[in-house]
Image 1: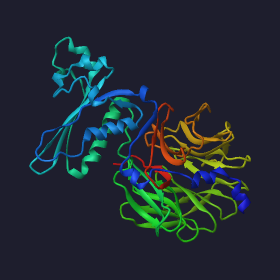
Image 2 (image 1 turned 90 degrees about the vertical axis):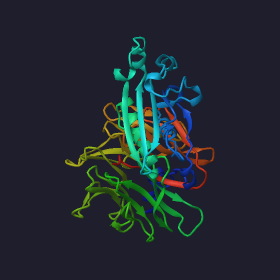
Image 3 (image 1 turned 45 degrees about the vertical axis):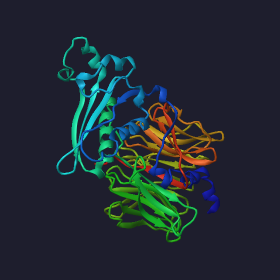
Amino acid sequence: MLKRYKRLGYIFLFLLVQSLFAQNALAELKIVITEGVNTARPIGILPFRWEGSGTPPSSISDIVAADLTRSGQFTPVAENQLPQTPMDINSIDFKAWTAKGIDSLLMGSVNSNASGQYVVNFKLVDLAKGHLIEEEKADAASQNVLLLNNQGIITGPQVRNFAHRVSDLVYEKLTGKKGAFLTRIAYVVVKDSGTYPYQLMVADYDGYNEKQIVRSKEPIMSPNWSPDGKKIAYVSFENKHSQIFIQDVATGKREVIASYPRHNGSPHFSPDGSKLAIVLSKSGSLQVYIYDLQTKNLTKLTSGRANNTEPFWFPDGRHLIFTSDRSGHPQIYKLDLATKQTQRITWQGDQNLGGQISPNGKEMIMVSQIQSHYNIAKQDLTSGVVQVLTKTKLDESPSLAPNGSMIIYSSIYGHNNVLSLVSIDGRFKARLPMANGRVRSPTWSPFLQ
């Protein structure tokens, strides 16, 4: 049996050697942009004016600027490089802004009301349109140069989430694609000492509001969010063998889904949340099954002597991809759930594994081995064309943002495992160094309400 497991080689390296940011790093996340900043779209973000009494809240504009930078689509212009700091729309010198290549501007104010809440007003201004009408000396406010004109009333603890909401609105207005800043990440922290060295954590996408949802003396791996973002499926060895659990993030209530002999792993929720694709070895080699969460029925999808693992659903819920060594080396296959027909879909590279389907169902992200390097790659599912997105020696654990715009993955920088980002087009790259600790098995949440 051990020989059979060794056949998967880097599949298990992919599953077991995954790094995200550590607990301390999460609280002080600082992005280091390595490529693509010069081609990102400049945007002006004015510091939101504090118009209340007492102590102002955390800077909403700073949070928005960090969000938009991490998206890879925008470069907020440094404050000392802004051509002016107008107080209102009619005092904007549109020509001065567009001369610097800045075609949109976010401006806002924060006040306090009698109830101790914060009243936030913000506007997104179309500078290019304003420039066109400026020579006519028209009132800019009356010429519909406002792309956004919103107000929110919030409490202190809601400031960060509100700022992420502003980022989502700005991102969607300027790109036409839904923003993913109000999302979360789940990951496993591994500490070298302590009674419970393995901890399953969740945090906002940028590392804030970190929360431990389970701890264990034995390994935890493969977390996966339910489509509504309320539950997480994961694998735990706390009872001295692998078991699959589903846990409610808010209440901590959990249940055992699979505890068969030998291996229970790789849980992945179906798009409607009614089923779970899992991997079991109760019949010998690793095989993919579907577990119906309502009826408790188990359906076997793959068979034979080959090892089949890492299932991932298509958005339509009618197909799966999985990794198999049936050709001698790990490659990715597509399975039609209605006909049970299977076809190999990766042909380039020595090995391909860890596949994920993009939210639009048109692309696949994977780890691709070419010679001795393991990199994040994207394959067009219609043409079969493969684009290698990263260049370092050992990249693994890719997880797509729910809007499909960014990939978060584990990489080696120096002698450390670090979290890295790459845009879906491979243009923008960033590195997020961690202060200490080791983190594994990252997974990006769906959009949250």
